[in-house]
Length: 70
Image 1: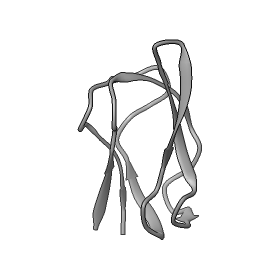
Image 2: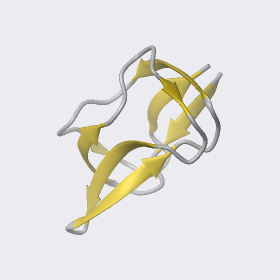
Image 3: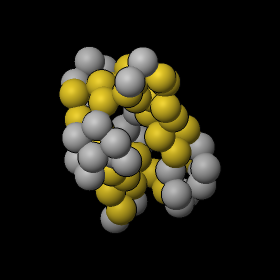
C-alpha cells in the first residue's frame, strides 16, 4: 500500500482517477491549483487506486495524503 501525498499546498482542481482504477508510474492522478498555476500530481508507482481521500475543491497542505494505491 502506498499513499500519494501533496507536494505543495493548494486546491484540488480535478481528481483524474476513481477507486478501482489501474494507474501507471508517471500517470497524472490529480490536478492541483497553487499560486494560479495548474500542477499535475503524478503517481510514482503503478497500482490500483483503493481510496481517494480528497474531493475537488478541497484545500490540501504539503504532505497531505491524496489517495492510496495497492
